[in-house]
Length: 217
Image 1 (cartoon, rainbow, N blue to C red):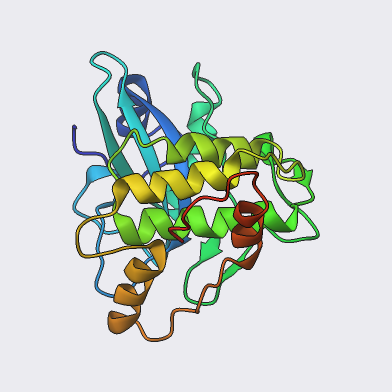
Image 2 (image 1 turned 135 degrees about the vertical axis):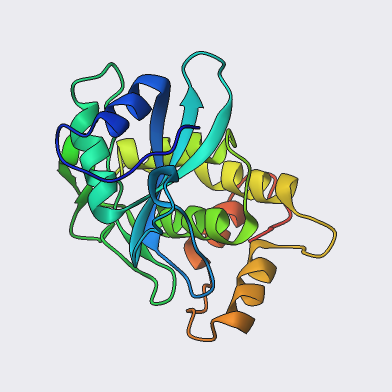
């Protein structure tokens, strides 16, 4: 990927990036202690709040993750409105406090619209963010499709989203971990302030299935 930098509305490097790649937002979150990501591929690191995009090469179909600071990410979104693939924003999530802008009172839907978040979808949104943060999935994971389904209509609860997330976690576990919580607990060794996540609503949704699965949260 060519080196990119932050800049103004006429920044040719960002325009080139959008010509070469289709970007899909998969995270809008907080930079954890000890982590460092280059902003848009340039030597400058992202700041406290950043975006992670799934980047698909338009010519080859190859996929990677692209990181961008808050300002840089929003600039890419603004630029994308003049391309064939508009980048959709996501609610902000803080894994340390468990707070997000996917609140019960409203959330950001497609195009910045306001929509009420169902409590289960909000918990799924948090769990998906933690999965991306802790498990280090590869680009192209079906998790981004589950995220897209939830954020497209955050007030609508679908019976497939909780089991889909549970299956994705199961399929990406390594030999050292038996659940998403194991990964989060590992992060907590480095960052003790990270909130304890119980995933009560997701667990209840899985238990209510006709054939309840083993839970990997």
